[in-house]
Amino acid sequence: MGSLFISCKTISENNLLSCFCIYHSLCFLFVLLTLPFFSLTTAQASHCRTSCGTIPINYPFGIDDGCGSPYYRHILVCTDSGNLEVRTPSGRYQVRSISYSDPHIIVTDKFMWKCEDGNQFRATRPFSLDTSTHFTLSSQNDYLFFNCSEENVIVEPKPIFCERFPDQCDSTCDSASYLCRHLPGCATALGTSSCCSYSPKATESLRLMLKYCASYTSIYWRNNGANSPYDQVPEYGIRIDFDIPVTTSCLECQDMTKGGGTCGFNTQSQNFLCMCNDRNTTTYCNDRGTSRQHSSAGAIAGTVTGVSAAGALGIGAGIWYWKKVRAKAPVTCGVQSNENRLF
Image (cartoon, rainbow, N blue to C red; front, side, top):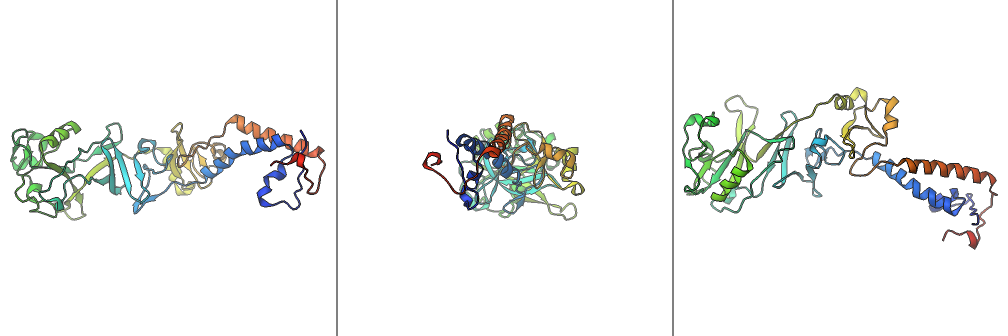
């Protein structure tokens, strides 16, 4: 195999890599083994997005894989149009807002009844949550059912005290519900249609209710900051409460005096990672003693950042071999024959 001699004096930018190639096989090996390395550098330079549209994305959530807590991995999705959605077993729902001080999210279901629907009811899917996640349906939700069959559903008025102590009342659909008499934003929208309030204990009971009712909607009680008892107002939507896993590692990572990193995790092992501007570390950004040795762990935005030991050894061997051959190779000035062309 003949040698390849290329002058570096007047080389173009596109042929910069060729300047370092002494043999055909070495050039191919160098390109093949360094591509994963450059991909690694690019992936580590990525950042976790901190918002989707107008909604802030903070720990424990993440919309890029490897960001936030692994407990909420692949649950939130930011669409191309900038809408934030949450995945559940019953579908994907648009997120209206997220509160981190009082941990909950508000979602909307376009299939639920709305004021503008009036007496026009359509098929509605039952909302459900995965019980294995750290999400729970808030007790501040109320569910209204419309035009239920009284042959299959027990519809009757409940005593007033049932609104404060629902667990002490029978499992009936309350036709005297306050919300049925004061629908938020449209008190008279239902006309002659019937309404009752019922809180399903499980997805199955909700599914049975919808089997015998024309439609339903969810109303949550929003805290408006006023003085009690006027501090809560009803609004359409589903409130989902969530847990915020608190760990010493994440607190240190977020500490501004220690670099102000972003909490994340290794997408393969799901072990904790602190995301810094130029690297990832298992401690915190200002911990220079350990951060570099962990810089190749994990992934951001779904990109694989691991480089195999064989690949690293191959790069090292290639550089050593190139230096050895370069010392023996003659220097030419732009001489290139047909025998040693790459293409």
